[in-house]
Length: 363
Image 1 (tube, helix red, strand yellow):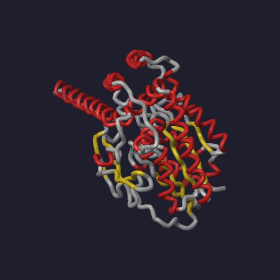
Image 2: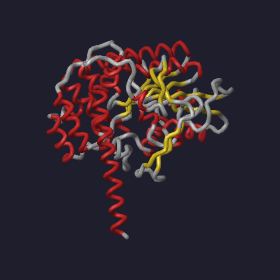
Image 3: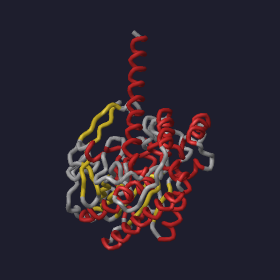
Image 4: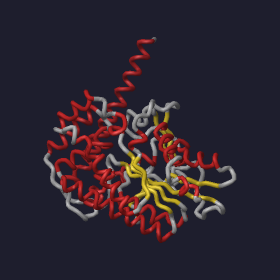
């Protein structure tokens, strides 16, 4: 009996790993045309592949389907499953979001990519945990922290998101930039929209990425596609920063016009936070991708440049790297490198005790 159960477990693990490897290969293949400069497409392919969860939007690029539901096994979570649902406006909330802000309510609107959208249950997202923290401290006040994170978002989408949902009259807009792939996504979307020409890359570029993907399924899309691109094509690093800065300035202008407080969070990668000590894995990756130790800091370098620019522009922001590093528990899923439930709790706590808490409570 025990031997049979062990075999079943091994089969299940093998199935998961195979699925992740296939997903990684599909990711690289589908994004190949963007980075090789083989012409643009009219619509990012996931919008057509994942119609259960996403839909095209003229302003934001894409948003969630309203009242969507996804449920799938997730062994790392204590429940063994992952239940993802959206509300009437496509937000990751269990309750509907009224289009008119309730009286005497501080409304905080949050967006970001799939890390903000969350591979967690709705109540576990840092948005909802922040709402709980604020409500607990101020029981006589009303707080509404709305999780508007959407997978596959890039800086261009963030600007479109606040433009589309400004009618909700948020008091605060929190934007989470995931530093592992938001910059390369800025290049992707700009290329797809015909704004820039992405560099042509040799086929072995993608072969090497796929080799790493087979070792570490979440490694490339969540952290190191961006590193390899910026190492081989430094001009794309500069261009990505310029694109990101342009759209952050656009967001700031919208927020000033709409009397919305604007806060940017810079979310680091699993690699930056809790994998630097894994020398054996990194040595293998470095050999395959021909990377130096310095190359492994490229994401942090780009993040530092953006942080410096945000300071110059007077845009409130938090770089979460230092406070997230050194935690006693893992903050990202091993399966796909997304922020896990404990990671969301840590981010909520950082926000709650940050210098910008007065902004959040509107004091």
